[in-house]
Length: 327
Ligand code: ATP
Image 1 (cartoon, rainbow, N blue to C red):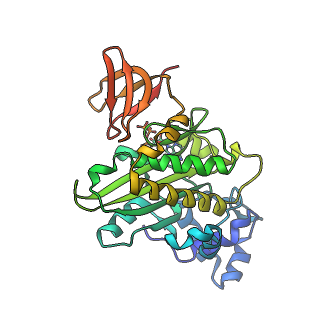
Image 2: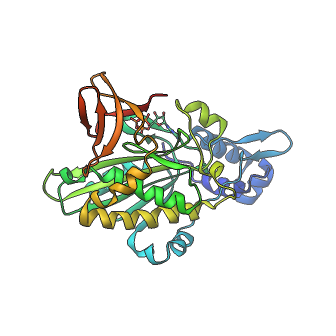
């Protein structure tokens, strides 16, 4: 659903988290109060939470720090020219958008960032929840000379990039959960969704989607069926959104350069060292409903999880398998 053209300009004005009256907003934009009201209704219909108090006006629940392309480029410093950056106000899913753009020839290292994502996706049709200003949601298109068949370790490699970035930012509790999650004390902090285009053995393209929570509102917590964490709660000081994004993108480019040359193997030890459930007893949920318990012993160079089960060492590839820890 396209957004009213006034909605984001108003949200920018409200981004300091303070009240603005409908009258003041109407005067600022030279429109009627009814037009302001319509634009704010539109924001709410796209999932933006707003407080409206009679006599005071409207405000956002928390200040929102919007991204600025030039500022982001400055923070990316020597990595700025790697990416073709696009910052969008609102879209359904950055992965869906970039998958479509990739099919139409979008450039290698296109990076699409959405301030507001209205239909974020997880694996197998699951939803990824976000709130305006509460998270970072972006996707990067990476084109590979090799076929999609050689990219099985990519989501684990991306996990290593996120670990490096989060630890640099001071979130030392952040850990990995096979195959594609970032957790902190068992709560989900970020998710990775990789979608591939191309042949198994010709050239291929990967759309790498990342959703990272900065803070988790009560409303979001209720909407998410599992415990969730936000980066800010792991840090002593508030780190600006654009600094977090630039740190993620720098490490992502570095890790993708390694992956491109040598695959997941050179990143494997680092991945295992950060696996939250390494050597723990885990349960693997298979697509046919079967459950297999064992010890998460290792990951292979192709990203498969190796589990010591009652019947011997079992190998799981990430496609349709979910891992749960057994307390
Ligand atoms: P798996 O272990 O198979 O990866 P998963 O439940 O973590 O399972 P994903 O597809 O990786 O599944 O992610 C989608 C799930 O993540 C949703 O079903 C929901 O439970 C959870 N989720 C959605 N939004 C958020 C969020 N912002 N923060 C944390 N978790 C979320």
